[in-house]
Length: 418
Ligand code: AMP
Ligand code: MG
Image (tube, rainbow, N blue to C red):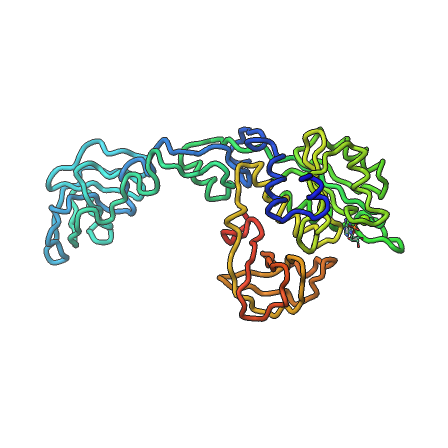
């Protein structure tokens, strides 16, 4: 009964996302070790706690003299404090003894502060003395003093499971002393475009044909999400051939994504192909425009997400269904943090019975629509967009100044692609 209901009325986007997640590998894709130089863009598979404090010792933030603040009270150019210089410590060196009353240690940036010293005097505030040094300024305890653990402390969790490794995480992992990282293996994805009208870029375009742009758009986005596109190609509008190509792909990947052929036309061959394959259809149709005819099925335990061929329909459903699935397979569930309320900066007069997704550019609580056409066959106006407006069913059109809900494209939540 439930499945029938799905087939006839479709599911909501939220139901669709939840249903897909039920069929993903439990606990995500397997983990693997990678050397730190290769870790960029991967998602980390365990919490990384620091075994050390950084810096591991109190250190000097500048070139000067380590002293006891009590010894330099009242010091000035006219009445310098005169201290005995007992040694010099450079970065990488270590003081041989503690510092006593009336003593100073010549110290360089990054060098450990000797015990007994509680502040550093900049060399410019001294006579640069070698045996004895004249100090021309008084300081309070812990002036110019960089604490042990100032950056992070032993036991701090600096990189949480599921985090994408950016340059900052690379630096943090290295700073904790890890030379390799346990990451999720990249989810392997097969991407197929269907359609007899499709021509591969590089070939000449015959009458009635178009270039296969969707496949590359999907491929790029899947890679941006950390996926590895392991197989790809064009499937002609023939059910048997489509079933054969899919069958071959199933054991090689974690997820299959197709575009085109999911509607109700004569050449919408995905349904027949899935039947030949013996796939279990989990849902057909998502109650949203564009991209309504999305099909989700499972064959040989491999999830197959079949998107519409309409470029924007494919893109929007990819963003809301495939991207979260890729995140989930890599230990991250980011679907909730991507919603924002925003003030609409342009009119959107289109009425609609069905929930509609509209491309836009979100910034600091405001959202703009692209200037060019943004029908579902158009991708050029996607440039610069970073979100989808989520317009509820029954909308009578929206005016500038109204509040709307937007869904940020994944990776844009923090303002960067992560
Ligand atoms: P379909 O979902 O197969 O009915 O296709 C809907 C529309 O999208 C048609 O205009 C197709 O020509 C177009 N289309 C389908 N697949 C692609 C593709 N891979 N690249 C660009 N446009 C496509
Ligand atoms: Mg087609």
